[in-house]
Length: 462
Image 1 (cartoon, rainbow, N blue to C red):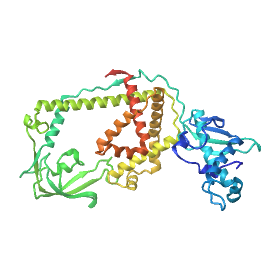
Image 2: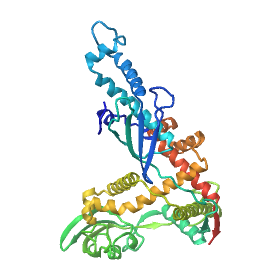
Image 3: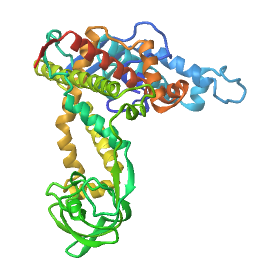
Image 4: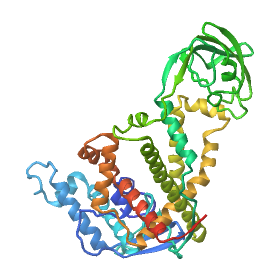
């Protein structure tokens, strides 16, 4: 078993969360184990050295032998009753030694983490150090990335500015008008198309006479609004009559998402089949009763205003939290572990891929259109990922200092909200989240910590 370098029992050590974070292992005695020492290589990486006495090694081997012997099939002996020497003659002593180390190494590593108050963020690199003598302890060296120790400065009374929560009356009227438009009826009209109409059209676009992908449709009801289309398209349809076909010139903006079309001039062959106009309901108590059978127009305006004020308060609170975090980050030294930054880059990249897929574009097409490689995107995302990790570590440090935790009631409330949002039984949501409960707990603690920080901030009004 002795010697230097990696060993199979190290490579095969369980990679469970408990192993990585100093969790509770059931095997072996609960007594205090081997001493350990720690060397800080940098703020986010340490080197642990653990000594295993010959007595501990032998005890672990004896436990390993007992477990192995229960499954041994040796003629003349019942399972679990075979003498160790006979077992070793049949299977070899190396099997016992390997199994012993598989049991003892994670336990000693976890103990060393607790003894030195370390919080790893990755699996350790473990090696067996050269032997020092026949009766000397076996020594292990574990190198692992850890959460940095953050020296917290003042985090209460942080000055932030409330951006304001007032709702202009014009915004209430805009939302009321949007309700009118949603409640409008489309009525066929025998007149040329005007802005705001919804004609049914066929169109096919071409650049330099060549049709391009995504530039054609048939029987498409199209609301004629300049802001909804590239420059010239809606304007060109205005004035057309049912049954008319026309060539409409339009131009793609220079920053258009599809780089192959950006800045290009296109010609669309457009045919109008029929035209419909929106008939808006009158603003009256009768209109308000579509939303509340006992409502009035004044009451509808009040409801809209109340909802907008709630949203404004929420936006203001989020804006103040952002200010607060930025100022806290400026005041603290938070070295982020490289592995956490890399994982955050992975997460941002996966989100980007999901967004591209939802837009109906393949990832390769997106990279080609953006004229970037995935590695270039990773480099772009790195700064944001680093900041996210720093904020996470800082908030967690404050949560620990303030003993902020997620209670069972907090978790139950979060699961209930998710169940309601997705229309699922609460028990089913609990089951789905079983393997991801740590993320739910982390989110609750973060939210409670940010609320604590904002509630204890010094708020000024713009």
